[in-house]
Image (cartoon, rainbow, N blue to C red; front, top):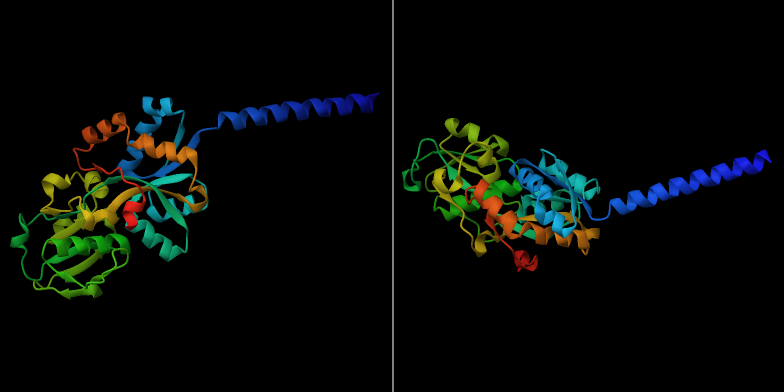
Amino acid sequence: MRKKIGWSLVLVILLILGGCGQRTKASDEGKIIIGSLGSDAEIWQYIAKSDAAKKAGLNIEVQDINDGVALNTATADKKVDVNAFQSYSYLVSFNKDSKSKLIPIATTYLEPMGIYSSKIKKIKEVPNHAVVALADNPANAARGLKLLAAAGLITLKSDFDSGIGSTADIVSNPKNLVFKLIDDKTGPRVLKDVDLATIGNTIALEGGLNVLKDAIYYEKVEAGTKENINILATASSNKNNKKLKKLAKLYHSSEVKAYIKKHFAGTKVDVNQPISYLSN
């Protein structure tokens, strides 16, 4: 009799636990863990609480991870479902360096990189032997060099790699610019110590700079800058994930676009293009 009671009790407990497990699984349907940093994390915190997210039936958890490599690694390891912080070229460079297989699933915006100076007001005023601060990560260094070339300060090889190109690819440097590699997060702080600095917009905003007002030259939205468009990135196994496709659509909703435009003074230019646009 005791054995029967004991087995009956075990069965009841298992049924209760099974029911709890089902309820937990059901409550997690639609949940997305998104990793981000800086002003992007701020945007996603807003999106997570927005009416648009509720209407889409998405439960979004935002994890603020203040390091790009760590963010991509967490995404590759599936500790987060998707991340939002990087340009397409940064992702390509990361995949090459780490042998990861992260993929872009949506475009978000172009954040123009700018050339900043606390000493010079116009590109034509750049002196000989000016010291130029470049990011010490390959993707942003290459992007900075392309921006300097677009401004007419240097000339790059015709086959310059936008993901990993370096100062070794400069074929003409008429002003004999001197390049100094820095942690790109310190860009705004080093302005007093250099003549020029190429700074990405997220870092610039955090340093109180507006690329449209404070930069002496900045990127425009055009074919030559499409590799600099920011994206949502995820593990390749999530290529057809319906929740993430919903998330991409949510980002470009009128409510979210209005918030971004208001809070970032137009410095995050909305880009709603198919992923194929980036590689064509």
